[in-house]
Amino acid sequence: MSHNPWGPPPPYQPGYPPHPHHPPPAPGAYTYVPAPVMLPVYPPAPQPSYVPQPSYVPQPAPAPVNYDPIEWVPATGLSAQSLAHRAFVAGKEGWDGSPLCVIRAHHSGEFIPGKLAIKHRSAYVPHAGKEVPVHNFELLCVPEHLVHWVSASNGEVPPGAIIAGNSHSAEPLYICRVRHLKSITPGKGHPGLLGHPGHLGHQAQGHDVGVRGAEGRGEGGHQDHRDHLDHREVHSSTTDTVPS
Image 1 (cartoon, rainbow, N blue to C red):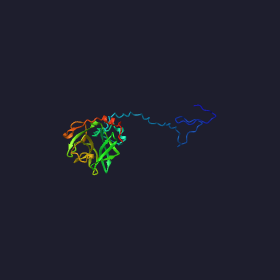
Image 2 (image 1 turned 30 degrees about the vertical axis):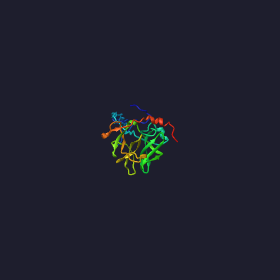
Image 3 (image 1 turned 180 degrees about the horizontal axis):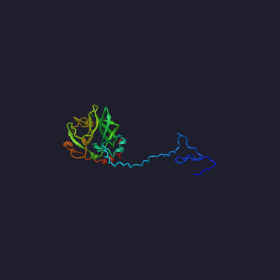
Image 4 (image 1 turned 120 degrees about the vertical axis):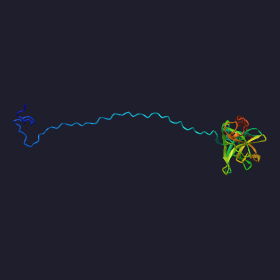
C-alpha cells in the first residue's frame, strides 16, 4: 500500500500488519470498526380493497292515500255560482223546478245540513221547525254517481249514510230529503227523528237518506232510488235573472 511520504501515515487496518510509521494500538484500546448503515424500511402502502356494493333491494310500494270524494267547500250565495258544476243536486223547488243543492252551516250551536237554491242564491237550514236563512255555509261537492238515496222511515239510518253535521248534544246529523207537493227538499236527519222540518213545519214520516256508493240496492237490503234530476239544469239556472 503506497502513501504520501510527506503526509500522515494511513490509518491502521485490522488484519494487516501495522505500518512502520503507524504505531500499533495501545493494549486495551478499542479499534474503530465502521458499523453498517441501516436504511429505514417502510411497510408497503395499503392497496385499496374492493368493497362490494349492496345489492338493490326493491322498496315496498307506498300505502295508498285514502281519498274522500265527498268535499265540503266554503261558499256564500254569490260565490256558490262558481261551484255550480261541482255542486251535488239533491232536489228541486216545487214552484219553478229550480235545483236545490246540499249545504251545511253553523246555527245555535249545531252544524246543520240544509239546502241551497242556487238559482236564487239563497241558503237555509232547518231549525226548530223553521227554515233559517244562512249566508256563510259549506257546499257539498261530490260526483253524482258516488251518492245515492235510500228510502227509510221511522227514524232508521241505513248503512253508509253520510254524516254532514251534529246537534248541540253531539248527535250525528245526516243528509236526507223529503217530498212535499211538487218539491223535493234536502235537509237534516238524525237517528230516531229523520226528515226535514223546514217550511213544512213537521217531521216527515217517509224520507230518503243520502248514502255513499254507486246507485243500486243499498247496503243491508234497503231499496234505493233516485229522481233523475238533470244536473245540467244547475248550470243554466245560474245564468237566469235572479228575482229582486
